Length: 503
Image 1 (cartoon, rainbow, N blue to C red):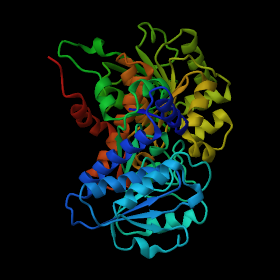
Image 2: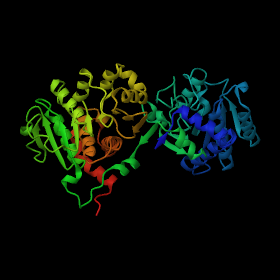
Image 3: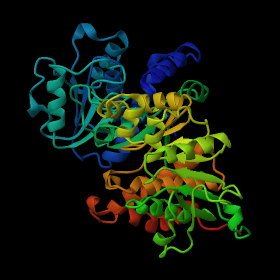
Image 4: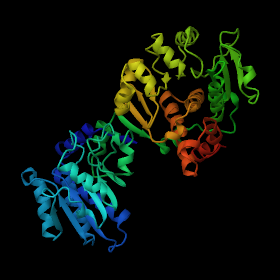
């Protein structure tokens, strides 16, 4: 799904007016009409359900709210109240025109400007619509507006935001002082990157993206840097498995991982690679892992540097989990660079080795999978700062490392060249040692089957997160998920997404 930064949204709005002659009034009317229809269908199936309050700020977002009020009234909803939180001299000509229209309809208008802290105003509402601030907010919300947002959040009713929850940074997902917490957000044209990361999901609620008439040509031309990867794309890229195929058809992953005390990292990755469809999987380390794979005889083993190990070159490599940070690990990575290996994913100790031995940049087609702590060592930026702006630092890391960067966490962001993709799945059930090793094996398994770095990495990461989401939906506690559970649940997820074998 294509998403757009706040600057891109403003450019799309401006170009729609200048190039396609769609006036601000037309766009506002379209936004308000679409939102009113969605609100009517989602929250107000019966005309007698109760009172609706719409809080309108001083800008275009407030104007959208006024249009929503007019159309809800036209649909038959009579118990409407519009709360104005805007100084009279701050209202644009278009805003005043919309205000005059609802005044002629007899809709009740309440001036909040002189009573922003009065929480009783929202006491008896069944639905509260937030049209206070839009994507143009450039600073933290302060009094008296913060008092209004606090009162809105205290209201015990269903809550809807127009375009973006007031106070939420649309690019970073950060809260600007205080932010409205919506049950549903009706985003106009495109979703915003901040909806998916940091504090965004807890304020956005259910997300609906409404078309308001922005020309498709502009969306495709101007919204080019950010994307959301969900179920639809995962279904598209998950490899099919024709019955006519054989083990050689589905690739060979060599996972160079594990050492005494951390053999489990290699086993988790190797098992996950098999589960996701790789035809062959070899677990290789600096010591023979043969003795630790007795319960999984399908996993081939080897010692790095042994004669004949690379006689037949694998389709893909995964390097790092549990391998240790050492000259030997450095030599593995440098060797793979020297033979121009195309499909390589590096994680854990492999990433730390790259930092310690100054191995960046890596080949463009490679993938590294750092969490915020590992990325902080690459960029020399505090992990807390990275978490506050995940897109920016993932893109910066792709520039520094020269390859694809999957910044793991909530939510994982895949950056490559000047683009980034947020993976819309996952939760803190995955916050356990070993979960990343499973992900590394899944990515490597898809790369071995021929998927390019972007599709293979994003698809594996989505499946990885989806398993954690379904763990919770099935009634299990978030804390109870074991990394070894992931490979066991992967087959059922793949079946639902992939639809089974091709004949």
